[in-house]
Image (cartoon, helix red, strand yellow):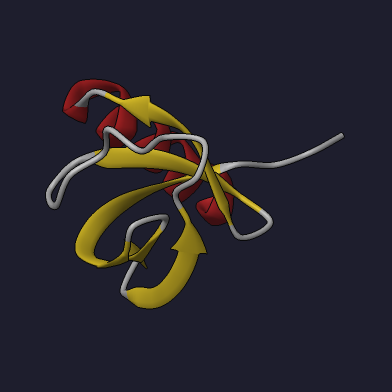
Length: 72
């Protein structure tokens, strides 16, 4: 089983790298698989790699689900 988390792109660092916000934690990740991502976009991050783009509604719904699981 693998887990990928929604994160918002906050800064493009290099052509294939960006800083993302993962629930208040900022981390530099590879953007090689989603070069079209821009600051403000939501991406799915798995082990240091952004592996896909998400729309805002899907990202927020996923984060809400994680919050519910945390409370259980």
